[in-house]
Length: 404
Figure 1 (cartoon, rainbow, N blue to C red):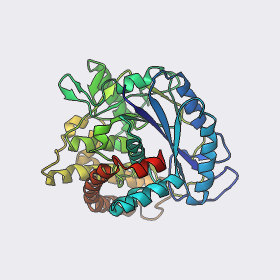
Figure 2 (figure 1 turned 180 degrees about the vertical axis):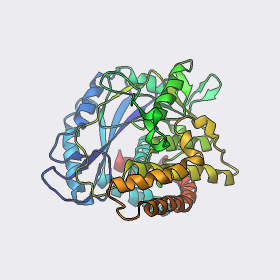
Figure 3 (figure 1 turned 120 degrees about the vertical axis):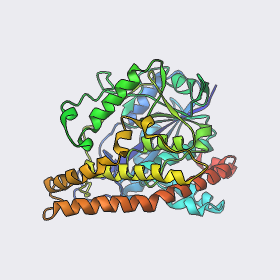
Figure 4 (figure 1 turned 90 degrees about the vertical axis):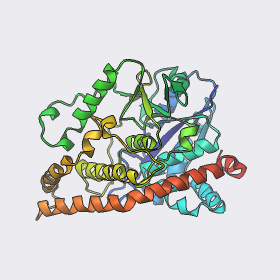
């Protein structure tokens, strides 16, 4: 029986009555400290799981270090209510300090800058690191606004991952997000008629879901995965990290990183999880940035990574056709000339660029390209640092006793 660690990152922010606080770290919908949030609901759903050998790791992050201690205590209070039901570990700022100090002692000071709780990618890396120290065979990443409705969920999660299946090695598995009605399609109307690719993202995702749905078999090779329903075997963790320098879409980015190492993720059509997004939004976020800008940053970076991997003989080139329709459509050259025009209008509409929207757009595109060229090589350096670090923490008893 494989030992499984289920990892649940949870994100918290200032209480609702405190207004005007800027946030150092941006998450989509962090829970205000004076609200109950959704974590307890997620933990409650694990009561029905009948898998015999699993534990839960909750990773807690806050939007500002000023409230980090309060956030850690708040989440610990929620966890304590479930400790008699199943084994739950908690990783937050106090244990992050221990981890960083031990990595420094082991000589891994070059990687320390990215061992933090400041963004999605680094938090996802911590879910792999801490689970690895825990000697877990399989790591299952979910989110704190999801619930498990299938008592056999963990049996399905471990059924294929890390094994050979019809001639393919299953380096990772992902499943669908279901809505309240049990649907995984986004069903956004009208996008197919839009000209700009960045306005058609949900439509392209649905087309990709359609292709996967109509591909024969329960398990199919996939161009996209979902970070809140994603399964990693120990052997994949040893080779692949999340990219600390990418801004969004860390789940699909991980799939691409794996492909560069010759590894593939598969979609399990029966491995489903219910996503119940909270109705509160990030009211303290002082950064006025459109989803369009985030996507352009993300896809320009990803496109540059796919180009730069060709310089490395020990890595595999990426065939964009294997990533179609989503996200591969965004890596085609013609996309960004159109995006530049669209960005100018979007900036103007959002009152971010009131005087020269076209110039603002060009400047942002150029910034995105320069940023990608500068940071992508840093990711390939990080890959080597990651593999060296994993070797040292594999049997480090001092770390295990402190964190686990």
